[in-house]
Image (cartoon, rainbow, N blue to C red; front, side, top):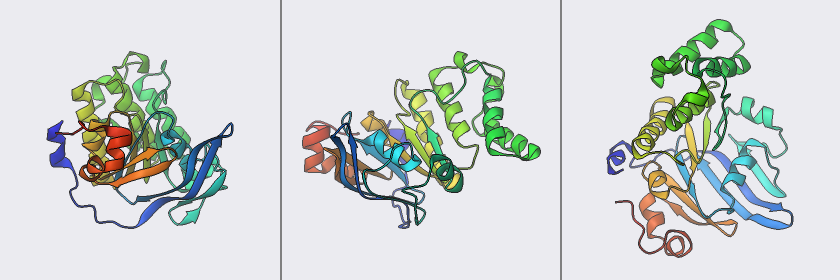
Length: 258
């Protein structure tokens, strides 16, 4: 995956935060998942989240979208406290997009009909819906796949479709949950380039969590490592790989991305 590095933004300069979790704590059945967590996500950065199973990566996504409530703490999006705002207001007012690990599309509908269905939910004006769907078809090179049912698409094609559907409402923040899982090397490279293009051409903030550490680190500006409900390392891919706590609690001594 070394080729992807030439697309990476080497020096990220925007310091303004678009999402902030302040002193966030979450419990599931008396088990603490997040412990007084402080997380800042900068505008237009690609942030990667890594950590063992059950450490709270998906919980952070659920907190941002409103699918899960904090037991303690605050969530700020674009400078506004959204801690008590419902899901629909967060997605519409703050332009959130979510690419789930599983699902996200209707299997018995064609690729074209999946896009049209989501466009009807988000865009009221008919001509604008048509233009948006046509733009995504061209952007993702879907022309030859329009009449194929979603259930008959390959894994990579399904993932591309779910990403395209998440872009219908022109999100400012796109959350991608395990986008590289169970995909081949070429498909992963394709998705990495899509994510980087969303940052550079659409100016979208992308947040990725995945267990494929090398694939994630090869396309992010910054990464955080989670362990025991806290962030134990944060920085560029090289910085987190070199971090002593991250190597001890997550990567191991032999890990590298070369």
